[in-house]
Amino acid sequence: MNKLQHDIDRDKIINSSLAGSLAHMEKARSPFENAIREREVPVCNAFIKSGRLAPVSFSQSGRVLEPNREIAASFPNSIAASKNRILSAGDTLTATVSGKRVAVMFSGGPAAGGHNVLAGLKHILGEGNTLLGIKAGPKGLLKGNLFEISTDHVRQILNTGGFNLLGTDRTKIEKPEDIEKVKIVCREQNIDAIVVIGGDDSNTNAAWLAEKLYSEVKEDGSGVQVIGVPKTIDGDLQLDDDLPISFGFDTATKIYSEQVGNILRDSSSSLKYWHFIRLMGRSASHVTLEVALQTHPTIALISEEVRERNITLPEIVDSIAETVIMRARKGINYGVVLVPEGLIEFIPGFTTMIDDLNDKMAQYKDDLSGKSIKDQLLFIYSKLTQAHGELLESLPDSIKFKLMEDRDEHGNLPVSKIETETMLSGAVRDRINELDSGIKFGTLNHFFGYEARCGATTVFDSSYTYNLGATAGSLVLDGRTGYMASLTALDRGAAPLGIPIASLLDIEIRKGKPAQVIEKALVKLDSPAFIYFDSRRKLWAENDLSNSPGPIQLWGPTSRQMPKTVALNREYDSLEFRFSGE
Ligand code: FBP
Image (cartoon, rainbow, N blue to C red):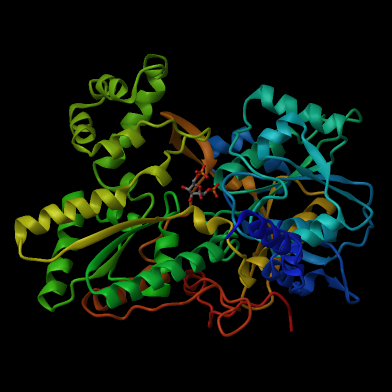
């Protein structure tokens, strides 16, 4: 092609009508996103009055959540007001509340559905009140970085995944000087209420804010209300029927299930690989359990079982190796092993070693600073107990280095960066070679994590979050503070609730010190979901019963399904959710 010809063709392409419409779709305007913005979101009957959306009032129910005594002493205002009772929704709020300025932020890791919380909140507050978005999470609140969320913004984000309208971060708000900064921002920007959309650590922030901003924030002596919304793909913010699941879990697990289903199908097609797949989810194994129920992998490890049954690393490795050999003898030289992200913290020996390490890293922070990772390790071995030092030293460098990385502001280990799947597949290979070197064992390691947190929101998450936003807005308009919005009875219309956040706190060791934080809900071995999994897994290991659930379905047969673990644990009759009385 000569140069002139090239220029002519280039102009033709750039000026074509197809190029014009492609350029128009550049920012969040794919045909898919345009279509999902138009989807109607089902609303609970509680929020409908004479065919229109209306906030509800709340009253204290008979359900009491007794907090830990030591914690109760730290939250006198919140506990005196809530009496630790869950709020249930009553009739439509009779008084018309107007003029409120409500600020909302995302906090912690993104999770699909956050945008619909904003939409439900904005719509329930109505035109008489103002919704302000806090940019970049708690850090943005400390800086007073706010803007007004308009109806146009809401139209743009409805039903879309991600937290991109506001952004998020993991700053911990606890120190008196931080609380003081928040008070100044509230006074300067005349904020009446703050809604925190976050996980366990972020809702711990919300509990502290609610307590400290209870009164005497504004010049007239009034306080600032604080309401939480339960978000996290990890699914570890749960409270039986009163909080069946956090939002984002359904979308993330459906995306991982599609990917795992595809890999299972690939493994039984190409007939030569064992895939070790680590799934995100921090400490709890809810994500892995849900994906296992959706896809029926050869093996799924559950961290809580490892801890409770005291299963050591060599025992985990042995049992995987035995399954590989058993299948190989039947001529099946492939399989899929699901590994929960937080496994390493649950393996006996590792748990206490990591606690000791956290403790020593906090204690010798100044000595460690400025040293290379290798020098930090040399320094820390001698500070740990002998057994812990030896265990740390025995690990592959890639794992050791990650264990030495800084904890986040809440004291969490960066488990998303620790390649446990690689460590395990390597150890299984060594064991197989010891037991039967003739076995073919081709391995591939994967981590499925960040690809699901901002995925296209499932119908369950879009509906759940819109109604959670309406619940949070109703709690604000009803004058409540220190509650987390929730919905119960997800299979029969869903009913709004308010859960006193301070009553959810417990004492955990973080960065080597006791800290008051919301207790993570872990997988229970006597839960219906685990019992069902336990009854099937031997069959999945011995045969090929894998399932490919396919991509998230927004229309069609499974579009109205909630997570299997939620339906089983709540003992619902079917997987179908219902957010309205129809
Ligand atoms: P939240 O608890 O804030 O919802 O975050 C969950 C999570 O996605 C974990 O599953 C994961 O381990 C972690 O965030 C990763 O954190 P980061 O986004 O800071 O890398």
